[in-house]
Length: 490
Image (cartoon, rainbow, N blue to C red; front, side):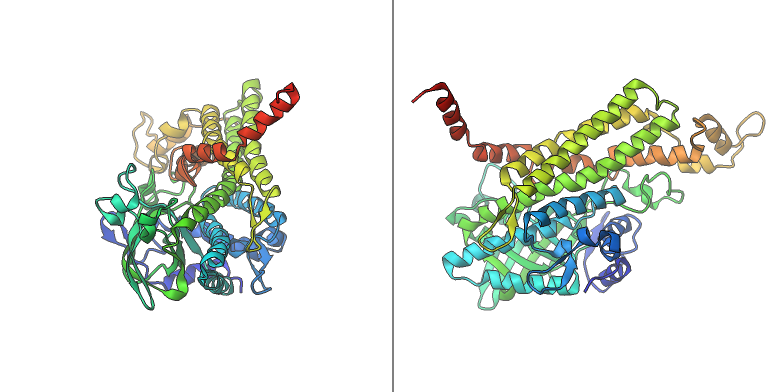
């Protein structure tokens, strides 16, 4: 039931996923140098599940089949499950220093499971059974599923049904006896190309006039009419250069985002989880967003662990590790990172059981977690750049360090000159310093900054989305009453 990392990679080769990048169709996308690091990240979620020392975090007993499954395909059965999820995500962040891409699917599973149960209860539909059968297949075959929520949205001042181009929100274009036909797109889709299936969800709460946009379903990644346009990242073409093992910063791992387009795709009834029940669109969005905001209290913390370690090494390599201001900055970075972890654990510990039986995190604390995520990684990055110094962005290329072109007055090569002038403390070789500086660059403003910086701001909802939820759930009226009670105001 549990695949190995290599089996996962080979399973992708069997798909007929349509991928476009830089204006061209990419036929062998599995081995493409820009894409492969992101596949290696997902493979790590399989490899760690095979390792006995991580079994408790990486696997769980399915409530549907009773079998051991990868935790990324699990429905949370307790607050302990919620805590283990966060710990698992921190572990994977530590192992990859990148986005490992399976969180969106796991969060979608749990949001759709509980929402379909309550939808069926009201309307007598069969969405919950549809979803359970789908998830049983996912667990049995150990598949990767992308959770797709974010529509392009077009004019943000208009609801879906008033958009000039209706495809700017994914919607139902035809209803058939055996299913529906959908059209539209989802953008910023993390790990979409590396997934076997997708779960699509509405992007916001809906009203009756937008009921055709209140749609949720599962779809294979290589379905007819579905294709991906790969999103580029900062410094991404370094992965295609001849001498790139050092300059890419993180040669093995990386993240991935894409625009997922559905061009009149047919969805059979058995894979439909919502089709017009607009009054439950908001519930699905809120629950998915809550789970995903909890996720950031794990994955971003694990990546932060690597960056803090890299900054500490940079101080040693520069010979500045004993300076009091360096020690203080590392303390601050650690304080900020552990605060984020506290939030992830807190919203998990305060979780509650849904009507469907799986566990939902505390939504207020999850939103507090994500609000902090929109700020603290930026400060951690600033401090890391401060400690590392300007060399992380001004260092010559790996090709220069290897060049045998003679330019010095005594016949020195460019490579010899680079190695001479970029030597540091006895704690490292020049090449080791190169590798470390490029890793910090990768995480602070290179390819991995997509997942650690900008995703921290906009992923799982931009800052204002959390502030709205904090306002709704902060119970200001209850707090006012506390003050009245203490002050003796009737």
